[in-house]
Length: 429
Image 1 (cartoon, rainbow, N blue to C red):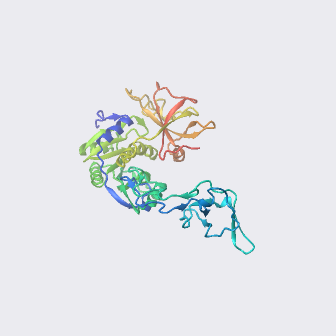
Image 2: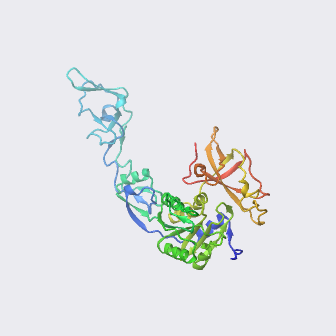
Image 3: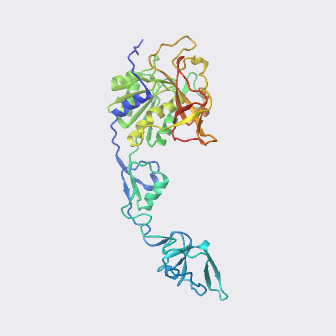
C-alpha cells in the first residue's frame, strides 16, 4: 500500500497564497478591435485622440437663439424670422452658425401666422448665455485620459473609448488554461453509456468558467488511470498552457496516480486542503506552470475551480484574487449533513465507525442564497443541496465554510455571518 502519510494539507487561504507566491505571469499585449474587446483587460492607460464636441453643439432638442436678444429682457418675437433670429437645433448636433444659446422645445410655442410663416413664442426665456449647449471639448479633449489600464472592458467603457477615436485597444493576452480529465471509468457524453462507465461532464464546466473568467480553454482528452499516460498528458498541457487543471485521481485509491506523477514532474505545494467536498484539491508547479488539482464530482469541481483556479486567472490578468465577502443574517440553521457522512461531517465518523482524529479543523462548504430583506439588510438562506441536485447548487450565490466535527460550534438562525459571494458576485433582490 502506498504511503500517504507525508501528504501536505493546507487551508484554502494558505494554499492560494503559496501558489500565488510561486506564479510569475507575464502576459503579452494584443491589439484587439474595439468592438471585439468586451471582457478583455486593458493593458495600459488610453487617452483621447480627439476633442469632442469639436464645435459648439446643442445639448437637447431646442430652438437656437442669440443671447444678446435676451440679455436685457424677453423680446417681442412676433416678427422674428427663422434662420435670422431663431433656428431649430437638435440633440448632439452643431449649433446653427452664429447662434450661441438653446432653449428646450418644451419651453417654446411654434406656430404659423396667417401667411404661413413660422413664429415662436418663448414660455420661459433662457437664463444665461450658452444655456442648452455643449462647449468645445466639454465631453473630452485630445489627450484626456479615457480609461485606466487594468480595467475590465465593459460595453460602456468601450463606447467611451470608441468615442475617443480608438478603433483598436491594447489588451492583455488571455491566459491559456488546459484541462485534463482523468479516470478509466469515464467516457465522453453519449446516449448509450457502457455498463460501469460514467460521462465526463467537467470539461463543459471548466470550459465555460475559463471563458467567463477571461481565459482561453484548451480541452484535453480523457486520460485513463495510467501513470505514464497521466505524465504525458501533463507534460503536453504544460508545454502549451499558462495554467493547467487536472481533474480527479488525486485521492488515495489504488488507481489514483496524479499526485505521485506530479511529485515526479515538479513541486507539490499541497496535496489536499481542509474542506469537504473537494478536500483532495491540490497545487503543484511543473516547469514554472501552475497545476491545479480539482475534485471529481461536478458539484465539487464547480466550487474548487472557484476557489483554486479563478485566483490564478485573476492574478494573470492583474485583477483582485479574493472574492468579495458580505455580512448577512442567517435565516435558518444549516441543514444537518446526510446520515451517510455521520455526525462528524466530511472526514468524520461515518457508517463504518469513528473516523481518524484530526489536530486541525475541517470545514464543510455550504451554499447559500443571499438576498435583501424587507428592512434593506442582507439575509442568508442555507440551501439544502443534496449530491446530484445541481439546480439547487446553481441557485446559490454564496459560500460559507461550516466547521465539522462533534466539538464544532455552529451559527444559528438570527446570527450574523460573513459569506463569500460566488462569481459573478451577484446578490438576489
